[in-house]
Image (cartoon, rainbow, N blue to C red; front, side):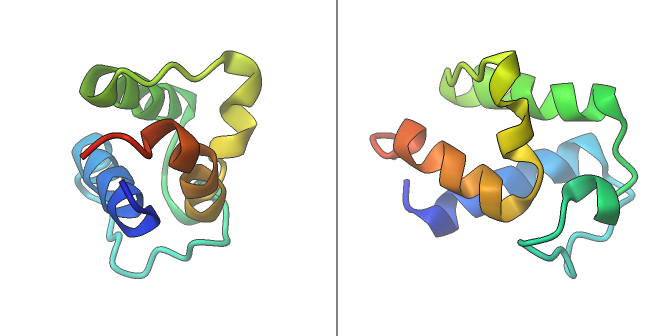
Length: 84
């Protein structure tokens, strides 16, 4: 997957987890928690969806890398490069 595809996949997961949120104005460089009404369980749901959909294991110590769209795409890019 290229970065644009990864971003779209994260958007799709966010739409499933927080269906009432307006993601059209989501800023890539601002933390998700500063833009969306996400709690810690929602954040874990994102991690679990990535695992379920793409078999990506994200260690707990790396959760901070998923703070914003920009950092999430950067973190996931090498893990998802061979996924089509």
